[in-house]
Length: 400
Ligand SMILES: Nc1nc2c(ncn2[C@@H]2O[C@H](COP(=O)(O)OP(=O)(O)OP(=O)(O)O)[C@@H](O)[C@H]2O)c(=O)[nH]1
Ligand SMILES: *[C@@H]1O[C@H](CO)[C@@H](O)[C@H](O)[C@H]1NC(C)=O
Ligand SMILES: *[C@@H]1O[C@H](CO)[C@@H](O)[C@H](O)[C@H]1NC(C)=O
Image 1 (cartoon, rainbow, N blue to C red):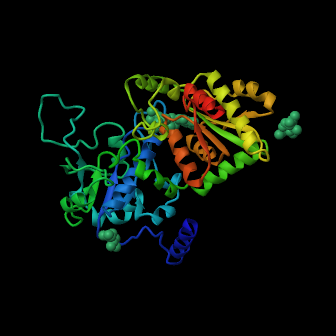
Image 2: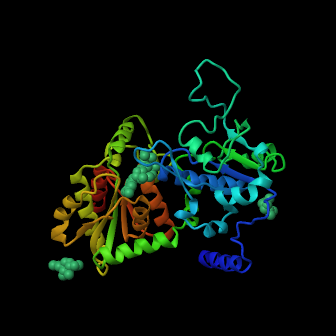
Image 3: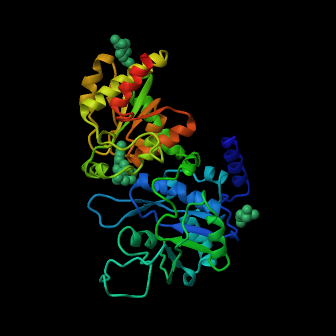
């Protein structure tokens, strides 16, 4: 059904020669924000929440570019939203427009320079501002990286700040949407421009399903299928995410003082109803990875005898362990593969297409893959989950 909707919308839009972003001004106004926190996984979590928020207060969502960081460069890069994802499927859920389109067509009328107010919860202190030197309360929306480079990409400056506290973005558990609409009418506030995403991290449980509207562009899907067809042996494959760079080792140190960390609710449950945090969930040993992989493949072979696993596709930010995996799995006639160059987006696309997926429960990068597979009904598992001890006791239980 979804597909047909998008298809007809597409044809319709082609016929009337617009892209269906509705170049008429939305009388209910717009939302724009800087995805200023974290890298892609974090930004994707925030995007889903922002989409739900825009939907709840019925304003068009301006699709921000993705903010990227490149080694040794001081300023962030802004990559257009539709480089990776199709805009059309999003229209099935809510009104959206890309930021560059909004700025070039509607902004002069809807959001003239003298109306550009930045929104933050409360005053944010400036980087350059001494702790006890009070200035006029301000969001300092363009202070630092990526804040400045982000708005500069579209030549946006702010003339004032608006502090929206105590309002917040949880539109699922209160009359919050009504409060926003009452306090900020579209007439007086045509665009709500947030210094950060109007959303929580990690993504709220209620918003996970919005992942279905975030669909890879044909160019990413084609590249993924081409890699699978040409570089992997014929047959089923397991996609695995190995998050093991030095930044991750440091992030995992927080496991010991938390109940949850980053994306961990995806396996532990949002209220820890499926367990509490433990170190191996974040960082695994080589032996642990190989052991779990072998066990998973054996289980899959029993469950799906006709569609045998022939290879492993490895995505990683640091160590792909290709040689270790090849030697550990050679007796099962399984080979390990990776992309020839670092491409976080193509890695994600291929992981989404794998027959089985093993991800890192703490990582929001893994969480993106898990959500995509969930709505398509594809199986996913997590490293070191459930906890080894629990797993053994479940087994004993089954035997009893
Ligand atoms: N190519 C590639 N890059 C990866 C992979 N895993 C992580 N990265 C890079 O590392 C970044 C990790 O940051 P996020 O995407 O925000 O996800 P996260 O794993 O929750 O990590 P932090 O937010 O940094 O704690 C990704 O956006 C990628 O740029 C991978 O499997 N392949
Ligand atoms: C939401 O906004 C659209 C477009 O501005 C409008 O047509 C629609 O009636 C609004 N819906 C509600 C429930 O207010
Ligand atoms: C191993 O895999 C290759 C390629 O998938 C296949 O041609 C070969 O017959 C397999 N050998 C065994 C012993 O299963």
